[in-house]
Amino acid sequence: MDPASGPGADNQGLKMKILITGICGFVGSSLAEALLQRHGNLSISGMDNLMRPGSETNRTRLRKLGVNFVHGDIRATSDFEGLGNADWVIDAAANPSVLAGIQGKFSSRQLLEHNLSSVINVLEYCKARNAGLVLLSTSRVYSISALTAIPLKEDDNSFLLDDSLPLPAGVSRSGIGPGFSTSAPISLYGSTKLAAEVVALEYGAAFGFPVWVNRCGVLAGSGQFGTPDQGIFSYWINAHLRRHTLRYIGFNGTGKQVRDAFHPSDLAALIDLQMNTSRIDGRRIYTAGGGPKNSMSLAFLTKWCDAHFGTNVPQADSKHRTYDIPWMVMDNSEAESDFGWQVAMPIESILDQIRNHAEHNPDWLERSGL
Image 1 (cartoon, one colour):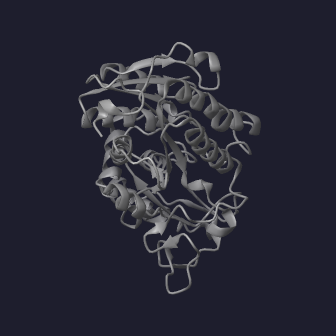
Image 2 (tube, helix red, strand yellow):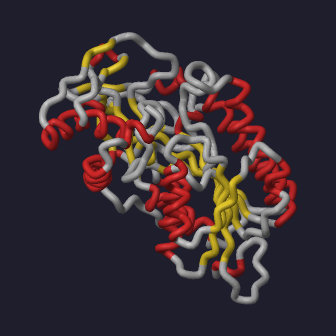
Image 3 (tube, one colour):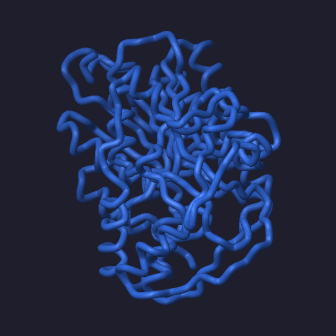
């Protein structure tokens, strides 16, 4: 499908119009930049309430890229009234912390307002403007008990999938796929994202606009705000470089818990393929992440930091935290099968990006709100 012939386009060769919510966050701003690099025939607008520390910096960067910024809050219906038409909406606005609602600055009610109630306004916009929707969801929609029951083994630095034992449905050597259990509890945060998926798919089916749902693993890269619960790779590298106290929390204080990481430019490539497909049926939910090749434990990340910055030994803290899990690696097989999509940026390049940014921005943790 030609970009100008997507939902809401007038088929007269005009630029595809994209609206990105949460555009001044790390993911939203990075997606805008990556999509503009991929295509010259895009018109991108974005809405953000700028409540996240550091987001104002991204507004300046986006303006230089020619992005039309709208200061607004997707929780407010009236903030959508002045927006023009769009062919696609990429919903990147959310409170992304798995601990949101149970600790920190956000109450459970605020979490629901940010991550679920606001999606209704986005969907009503898509319905009224005949715009397609790409909903960014999360790997944390999966069952905590099922995740902790995945058979694992361990080496000196990491938990590893033990595929010599029977694996539960939705898990393979490639990681965790869309078919893995979403039975509660999954965290308050995960439940808001799972509910948003269901509502979005129902809206798309009822009102005839395309919806794609991407359950994303850990997104990471240069310029990511560095907080422990929202940007662990960025936080760890910045904190290690500045000799801040680091802690291995849970799992006997070993730091063997594993996550995979991928860059927003790779997510942009998948979204680009989804927005330009003519398929109207079939599966709509995909898992997207770094996969096994781009996975790393916290202990191994520390070794990487030690090699670049000198030794900074984390403290062991064996206490268990609610919603902690030992291993999460995403299976990209279905996205590869349906769209020919593969992760292009290796984790080493992602870490080098973050390191370079950290070395040139000594106040980054403070600007991130720490």
